[in-house]
Each structure stands twice: as structure tokens, then as C-alpha cells.
Amino acid sequence: MISYFDWLDDYMEGKLSPQQRLDFEQATEQDEKLRHAVENYPLLKQLSASLIEDETRQMLKDLENKRLYPTIPVAYRGGSPPLYLWVC
Image (cartoon, rainbow, N blue to C red; front, side):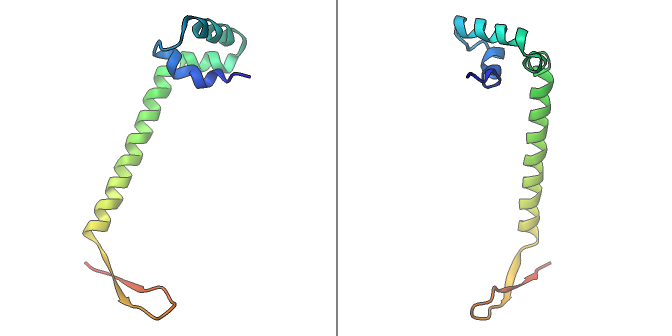
């Protein structure tokens, strides 16, 4: 069975073959969730991009904090993991 949700991006970007486009459009007539996904596609793409942007900003902030506040091992005891000290 075909998951037409996998075709959503290609449909919206005009990348489906004529037959695939027809199949997709027929599927939207029968599947309310798919129809809503098509109707809300621009909003969903914008929301998705915003979430990715937020995650990227947080990752960069975390990396910057690690650079600004590095840790150094204080002691290492054989099989135990090293103890760390924040260097400020």
C-alpha cells in the first residue's frame, strides 16, 4: 500500500509524474488527513523550519558554552572516571 504522505513534498513541489499526481489527488479526496496536510503544507513547512532553526541555535549556544567554560580533569583513579573541575 502506498503512503501518500511520503509524496507530499514532491506533490507540492511539482515533482510527481502525471500519473502519480492524479493518484495523489484522488487519495486526497478519500483521506481527510492527507487533504488537511496539503491545505496546511505552507504552515507546516514554516513551522518545521522554525523548529530546526531553534534547535540549531541551541546547539550553537551549547557549543559556545563548552568553549567558554571548558572542563579539565582534576584526578584520575585507575578504573574510575576522571573528576572534572570547571575552569572559569
